[in-house]
Length: 331
Image: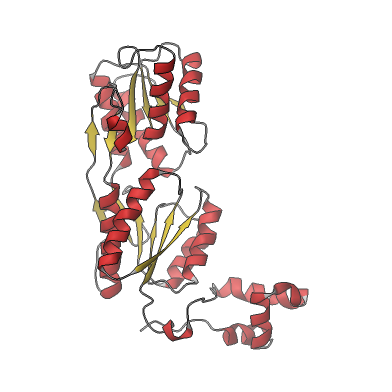
């Protein structure tokens, strides 16, 4: 059974108004006097109230629904993650509510609150850095939480992913072992995972006495962006002999730019990406990449979530899945 939920009457009592006034404020705040609305809003903020959109009959039972937050609907890696989640939830006869936050912390906070309003039984998050308010709401909801795609640092409840620092280090070390020396790191959003990969790259470079260099446009990655980044990098670092991209979109764009401009890959420039998308392995030459287990991460995360929903005594804090270095033909 769920613990007591804050009701409209609770808010009305605290605000010194009627339950009907609170209900009207939540539906049409412009129809409530400004001073009264401010008082109600203050109470809602103080007690972390989330208006429940599920049928009243479900308030004391499981909703058989979990929330999933991903940073982009355009990125294939999250399509693979969702496929794994859907496979596990289907087996458990659960439904998923999926929301996108476009790599924006404030948007993630809003979407977390929105998902919680549907009386979900658990939530899967693609990020480990959240606003304080988002964390406050998640704690107050008292539901299982799984953070995915990264296992560095602490977690709110449970986590499933891989070590991005180690992956960045291992790929850079592979490039160095191939004789490359001026390796430039291509980032994109400058998010937590990208930062961990860059730190791994920097560690490998520093161990060889080489300066780490990064091109980071802080923009959503695409093949077009990867092409522009390489063109710009060649102006700033004319002797670069390798690039390590934070994802395969950037590496594919860089490869296509080289082919259009007659630059031999890997003879002149080695190219490595991240995540091991199918297309990167089917290209000619095939692009070197870190192959990440996105489907397995999604499946395992949903599996853990359902186990904890069914057993409040279930304990599983961290699952670290392995990645693979795919050499390809571009290094």
